[in-house]
Structures are given as C-alpha cells and as structure tokens.
Image (cartoon, rainbow, N blue to C red; front, side):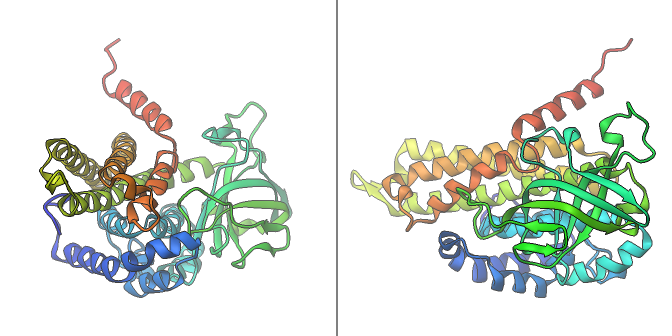
Length: 401
C-alpha cells in the first residue's frame, strides 16, 4: 500500500474493515477480474465472498443485522473494490442505494421486511429512474402507477438498470396523479414502488419483463438491463414510505449518496491505473534505461499521482459531510465530477505509458480504459454535476438584495 489516497482520522474498526476488503480484493478479485470481464461473466464467487464479509449490510443498522457503519466507511470499501474491478462495486452500490432509501424513507413494516435480508445479501437491490427517451430529465418520466383498490397497476419501460437481472427487489420511480391536481409540478407527482421479483430474464413476475443484458463497451460482468411493466400489479403497502408523491425526493436522496460512491469508484479505478503505470514505467526500458527515468514519463506520473490524491480528498470530504448530517449535494457533485474526470485522465496516461501494450487485452490497463468512461455518465453526467455545483454556488454566494 503506497502513500497516496490515505485517510486520516479513521477508527480502529474502520481501518480493520477497509484493510479486510483490500486483502479480499488483492486475493480474490484482481487475479480473476480481467478474465471474467473479457467473458462478460457475472462474478458469482466474488459476490458470495463479499456477502460473507458483510459488505452488503455495511450501512444497514445493527438492529436489522447490518454493521451500521458510516457512509465514509462504505465509500472507502467501494474505492477498494473498484480498484479491483469496477463492475463489482456497481453490484454493491446499486444494492446500497435501495437499502439506504429504505432505511431513510421506508415504513416500519418495509424496513422489518426487507432490511434484514438485504444485510445478508439474500435480497439484492436495484433501482430504476431512467427511461429510453429520458436521459437526465427525470421530471419527464412517463411510466405510470394507477390506483386500483388496494393495488397499483404499473405500466411503462425503464432503462439502464444495474443488477436488473440478478436483483430480487427493484425501487421503481413512476408518475402517480392521484391527489395531485392538474398543474402540479412534475416532481411532486412521482412515487417510488418497491417491486419484488425473481432473479433472471424474461417474464420474472406477471406484468414484469427483464428482456436481457444490454451489451456494453465496458462495465461488463454486471447485468445492465431494461425493465418493462405491462399491467404490473403492486400492493399499496409497497409504496416506499406509504405515501405517494414523495418518490422524486426519495430517489434524489439515494442518488446523492450514490454520487459519493461513484466518486469512490473513480478514485479506485484511478488508483489501480496509477499502480499499473508506475510499475510498468520502472520495468520497461528504452534508450538504455527504464522509461521512469525519462522526464516526460516522470511528468505524467506526477500529474497522475496528484489527481489520485485530489480526487480521494474531495470524495472523503463529501462522505464526511453527509455523515455529519449536513447537506452535501454541492460536495457530492464536486467529488463525482472531479473523480470521474480525473479517473479518465489517469487511466489514459497509464495507457499511454504502456505504449502499444496498452492496446493488448493481455494487459489490465486495456480493461480500465474501457471501464472509465461509464463514470462520466453514471449517477448523473458530468454536465449535470456542473449544473448542480453551479446552482449551489450561486445560492451560497448570492449577492444581497
């Protein structure tokens, strides 16, 4: 473990958890990640190992069988897992967001029913906001939930579900117009439904179809899917929090902590790219000496190391602010934006250091080069982050009068 990306002020328990996860990554993920990624194979054994470590219940309160840890602890574990293979961190992160939304907004019955089984990984979570023609405009969703007695009937098509096939619980955002007069702001007529389903593809319950995996450039292994609802009937007690019209706020709360963890993923991938680059630079010789002794390569390594450190510090600050109970959308937006951009740049520099070998599938950097771009768009694009940051800065620095 090098000097970069250290975190001051951790408790002994936090250090032990992060160290355990790092050891697991070094022994169980890094040796097999590239092979599994090239085959686009779901990492079943890795996921089972993380279940045994308690990672699926890291932030779930102890009363529900979880470890009751902080967002910072969780983010540092995500950073380590992404350093091994970013797809695995995606499996964990999507589950975590649903568990967090339940913990913060669920009814007592919903928490009692889901959280103990989520803590063990028996129930695996996914969440769904985006739609095929939607992009970043969440307020324009067209999927609908219509009340029918003690049930809601859900209809619509969703897109980009991480864990869409392997999950057994999906938090789905739909429009519900009941009790909301015409002219109500779009974000005030949205509801989150807790949809239980069987894992797999095809019709996984009456009215609910998961067509299959979307083929992707990178971020392989994890299943990314569509979700099609056609007369899907959901009991009224599976409205998150028991009240309609709160879905947009619940989802945004989940995405806010999710952005800290996307930042952590960017930090982890950047760290791995730096490790690969600085190792290769000391092994590869040109003009009679290791390329690390050429000033051009030293400049690259200096820039890469600085970016790794800066992204980590910003991510840790955003996590700590949320843990303190303060609003952190500004810090989370900054961390997600900077970490994803720096990740892309550090990976590209490590790719350049590898020269022609960086283009070969035999070298790990080839995998990272295809994975890094997902972070520029996941949990809100870089452009969305800049909009959030810009608006919040204007709020903070508004001129008097």
